[in-house]
Length: 214
Image (cartoon, rainbow, N blue to C red; front, top):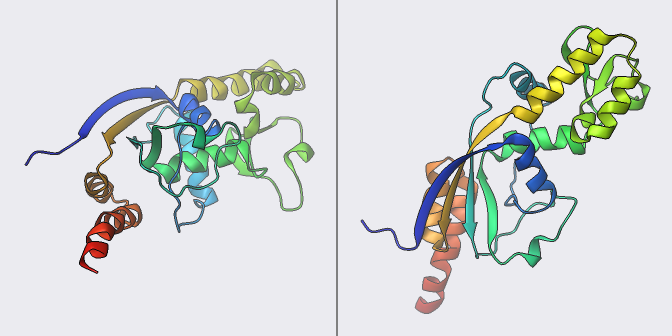
């Protein structure tokens, strides 16, 4: 069957680049009922990044259609962009990493034990002992340099640098679908298991028909 106004492509992009696009509101996340990922699952993602294990692909939907979205990015204005890009698959994984780096004061990396850990309740990353690396320093090379200068020996510096290097080189396959047809978008969301958004889009597709019948 012919699919009207529908195209797709796949590229491989750096995880760091995708996170930066989220922060600039160039990629938007459709509103969801699900809450944030479990903290242990988030740390498993970082262990995978450290060990060079792929963390899976994501899918974007490129369209001029308007969809209610979560407030994720801290920079830029999503309303200024006519063509939108919505994250329709892989949002839980990408947002878990994004939140741990930009919004959370919970995660750090124990350079001595080479283990991801949680900041004790009631404390912040600024209270951590020397040798414990807040994950937020991975987002800014100057913060990383400042952190490394406080480390007592070269072995810990090398471990901090190695984690940063793994993070900067992490790659993610990005599938993009391009369509303004809500029905096709709904079918795509259903195919990747995003049933919540699929139902919303399907309902919008049927709304004009219902109005005509009324």
